[in-house]
Image (cartoon, rainbow, N blue to C red; front, side, top):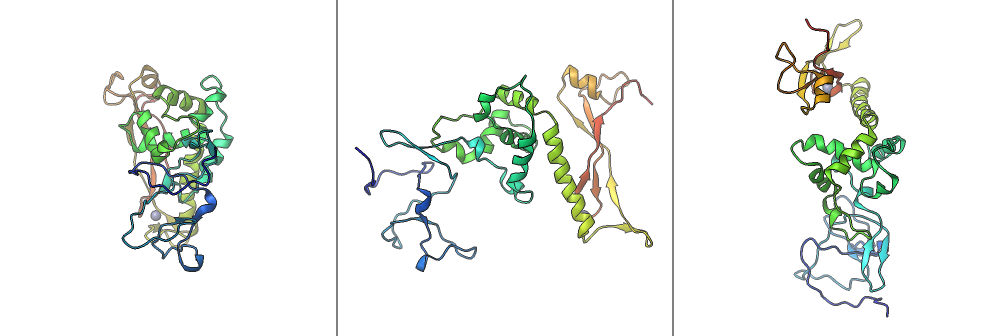
Length: 280
Ligand SMILES: [Zn+2]
């Protein structure tokens, strides 16, 4: 027996529950069906709603994902796909657009030694690029926590195939499989757009030197970043502060080039802190 049309029958509702609304029923409650504009502060409503009165109890839901439905025989409504196909870094992707990371991910070959195709569902390439970017903003968090943070409310959706954050080990395999190239491409894109913005419209506070051929002044300052203390990192990056390379942490040496005025980062060449066999 079909459960449709679903009769109105109030069920207990609490925060964190998911309500699935057919896309075509998401409607504007404004008079004559006018679409909600930026100036309107209204929730959408479900088409067919008889009337909402001031003082009536209303469930306010946030849209987490628009996905294809999967309906079980007993009527359970689930979502096809997985959080990895929907999660974004939110405002961080507003300027480049969410398609940028997708495009980089599409070009990124995966090292077959580390991941097999069928695990695409748990950790897709674009998702993993976002995880690596988010890791830099949550340096103390474990990979599983970063993945859970990126999924956010998407983890609450009843996916057709249950989703859980991938393990730290799986995340490490994906990071190895992606390699540095997609992240370098993303870095060049972000830094390149800061550079072009300064070249095109300029920067209101930019410091220029010279009159005949004015040059914009940038600021350069070397910096050392600790990297995890593994034998491989020690061999590649070296340590500083001691004559015999026995410093507490291997370090990466970086040279950020920024705008003197607004501190926008234009470039950051980096490499080992110590060139082995080349000591002053
Ligand atoms: Zn600037």
